[in-house]
Image (cartoon, rainbow, N blue to C red; front, top):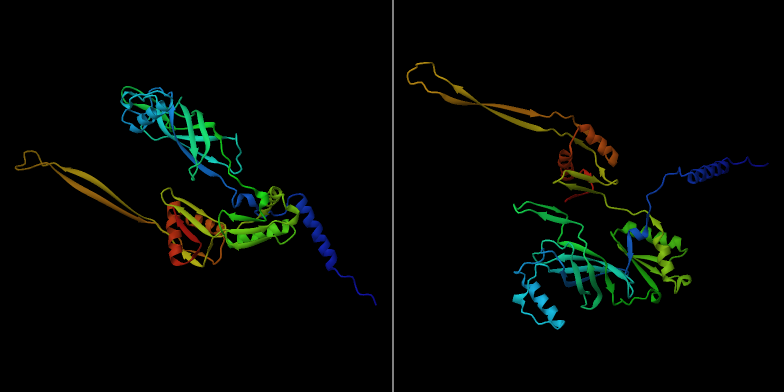
Length: 378
């Protein structure tokens, strides 16, 4: 005797068809996914900071004053290197300013690449607008020169003043930028193709996120190339198909999507009354009542005038104070255990609390042990 056909298979097929249709038309719920390149970096692939000391010339009387000894000595030394001997006391530096020049050398920068540089006044110059940065070597932490900067400065601001002392200022005219003003003169040797293992460093270490990243890499590379070392480090063994093709491997890993996990945290800025709560914030069963106490004191002064021709009478002022005390009568609100952030917001809105009151409530919840999240005050 034949067994009756099972009804489970048609139901499963129908569910698969419905799911496929929802995904096709974008109606299925999307999980929050972020590219790996946005939450992690490869060890060794980073920029390096460069700094140098230079002079800005061509200012319209807004440079350093005669009290800037560093600027005077720099001008004298620069002129002597060019065959001009001059006494530092005879130099007028109103059109010159001493500056510090900074920039970042990106990874794999090659000879001849141009970089933007930031110019900052270190003397008492008032404005760098219209000035030109002279030849300035930029050194790294090892003391080697990696780039040379020179060019016209753009401040993006101005300062104008009158004889009475009033002035108008926009932005910071003592800070400027030389667009594409630095020329790379030395490369940092680094060869990716010589590596047999890549190391990923998470921007925010987390054990759950690190595990998800390793799983996504193993699924994307169809193997077990990734393993976690700790909450912020993932090692990826170079598969045989990607030997001498590390750039393609890095590009493939960076494009993978993962759902990062974060610690439940409530951030409070008491100066501005700002409160930020993450989606994973939960509250245990607790009853909340919050009332406001306001005290108003009004002072009135009454004048007491004596009767006409009254012997010994004097006009006196008698103070009168009116005291008003009001206390808000808010209801007691019960919040069940494990409520979500949406329930928390609705409950607090029902109490009619302001951001300032919300800060006090959250601090009290944390003290009572009912707030299952980190409370951070900035």
